[in-house]
Amino acid sequence: MKRTRILTGVIALAVLGTTVSGCTHVKAWQKERLTDPIMSFEDDAQEASRELHWIEAREGSTGGTGSAGGGCACN
Image (tube, rainbow, N blue to C red):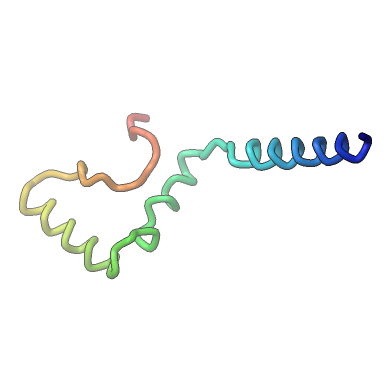
């Protein structure tokens, strides 16, 4: 009986620890690391960045490419 109670307590603490450890607030200056080109799934992130720059210059617009990042940049 006591052994099951200890095992249940350990499992509950492990679940609580993994659930709580994933919660954090990211500051605005830390978000730039999340959009680093090296974090891209592309084979050649620099080439994709150059091509995106070329397309943006040709179209006269930026954004709307679905890149990962946080915030709305409306500070």
